[in-house]
Image 1 (cartoon, helix red, strand yellow):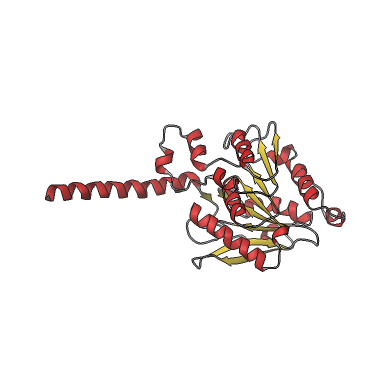
Image 2: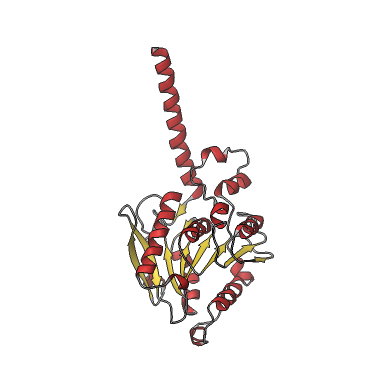
Length: 280
């Protein structure tokens, strides 16, 4: 009996070691945060302010906010797995220049936010930010969710639960496990990964218009995954792919024009907001 107990204890210890070791590996492979806390004014973003949003467990999540001009939607933006606000300041500038409201959330451990990122926390924090946007007076029919790379798996989960007007998915994936299999085919990713971001089941519950933008030469997330996510959407889905574009450079191949034109069709503008912009 003593021997049996010792064997069980060893097995439990090995299981615990494997679990915590897997968590550490997953963190290092999946999340690449820029931890610096940068204010919008430090990158010359006018009309953009930092706000803290309190999540379900009391953690303060940092966001950058810019109010929409009358008649324009507010884009709630969930970024990719690297960097933070500062590395996306030019994207923010583009949307704000055209009159769109923009609320960008950064994940725990990124850009000055406390804590450690995980799928559970990222999605829960995204829900908290959505609720804060609604509480600020923005109606659901004026909210567009934008998910960039890793953030596409966050955006599609929020869209499956919350009322929104539309969704933009930038280089989306079917699941992070599928992405891991592409890059590490020798690893038993389905057994090891707890942050899975299964996009397809959530996509099947999204009924609003969705735009998928994806580089055709994306070596990080294959363009076929973007098409598969679009095919799973229950609502009208538009797919725009860009020959020659990789994972995060499709803006060099015209993606801003595609995104702005798509938004314009959903939210026709009288021209005043666009005239105030500085060009695409």
